[in-house]
Length: 197
Image 1 (tube, helix red, strand yellow):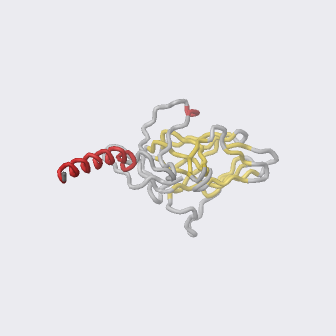
Image 2 (image 1 turned 60 degrees about the vertical axis):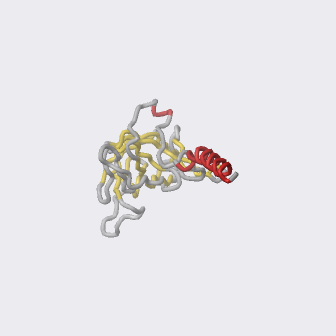
Image 3 (image 1 turned 120 degrees about the vertical axis):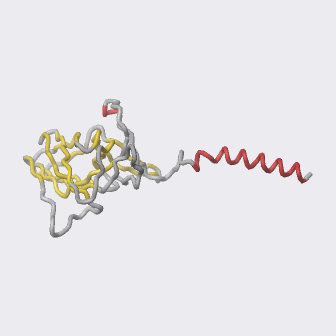
């Protein structure tokens, strides 16, 4: 009798382990913020390495009488640049690519910041290390291409002794462009952290 109970217990424990394995292996973690986005369909189904991701933030001001729109971007440090937003869907934070970009209203501004709109750098070609600067080319419907130096640092505010210079192109002014440090994962690299957007 005791032996039969032992065998039955072992059988139930094995079934429970098989059922619960996907959750413990990280296949499904409801409520967690997406930190490794896939390239959007609008990216033309390009094959990318997903070797690491980063995000860039900034404030974009429009002094003009007409709205402008940030629609795309490129950077030598990553394979793909996309415009994303983070939204709360029934208590779950989700990251979504914005196919139509972000509008910069006439006489107004758009703030790209952690937890909201941001520029996603997908497939990093090199590590983004604290203190470095990289060029990000932003494409606007009206202002055209604007090259913005992005400072890599762990927080939004620049050091007082080394403030970031704004970039102006026509009616558009871009201030405080920054990105958190992030690893470019590849051969010989292990992830330290994936930046939350």
